[in-house]
Length: 442
Ligand code: DOR
Image 1 (cartoon, rainbow, N blue to C red):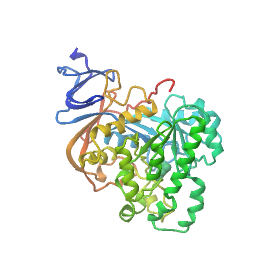
Image 2: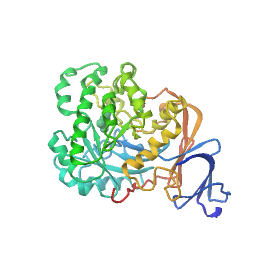
Image 3: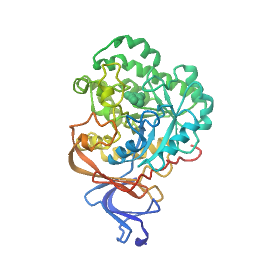
Image 4: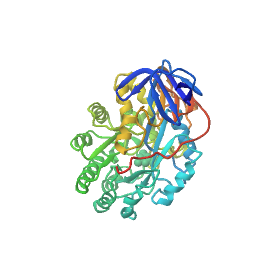
């Protein structure tokens, strides 16, 4: 009955699993209760006419820096940026200070998130040689997104370098393991290329394509031996995509909006160390290969790798600068602009940002607009043309590599489990994000 809904999202073009339809969505108790023409009479009506209603965007790779690095970001500011950008759920990375390497550290993040995060959330536990044997038990803890491995060192101290230790990590547990693939030995050996100072454009030479490929090759070999599913984060090279195409039974694949959008050497000339991230932004040949892999269906999801550092930190001389750039708030606008330019369809974008994450991580009750699922929606205006400007950004780091970019397509409302938390660029209500749930036994 119409009157019993808490919220009706009315008259939008709703991206349903089987295609789009101009219709209404009724919400009760934070879940989708009905899809179809609904008479008004709900406690709240969100008029979506002229807009597209997407299943809530899930960003499966963000660094929100709390605890220990709150001068860059914290769980409140990072999640504000998320919902302002149309993101309804995030998976947060373990390279905080201290790193999230124990059940206690995970519990601490969950407590900190309560009443302060605007979007739903899960936290990765970081693998280390010391905790490898315990990971199988810990990966099942409520609020845990799974296990994250750094094969090459990046921001923070987390590292699993040797084949032996990586095999021990992969042998412990059964959920899909998310991996940063850069080969530590090769990184160390090539550091002489930038030792003592270099142009930031050297970043993809130091951390070259072979550094990434060597790690991905090792990971696939060890994952096959362990019969363990893996997820290769932020893939950046044509050669890794060729390899990953042949391992669809074992590995899923993430790309980032920045690797799809920026290219060397131009990005380093224009942005300097603000374009510095790990693995690096590479040249046009690699960027084209990422788009081809996306078109071919090899790419399973997008992650922003939101990795905020202050402008002061970024203005040190390279390579003393930290790697990483913010991105949780710009993920959707930048990708909608690619949709407007015809580089991918809106359906494919929804697959990459909602259905894909839900499928590969076995998220319970999210990832599509369907009866019984969480009422997470991202309302977008595909015709809106807007500039990405600094005053719109909520991240504490206060900048974006995409500042000044004019995009077509914009998030205009964010709904998390039935609560409208963003409308026309303003936050609404209070932070009510909850831990993401995962399917049992997967
Ligand atoms: O560029 C990066 N920054 N890559 C990573 O793997 C970590 C991240 C960070 O946390 O700053």
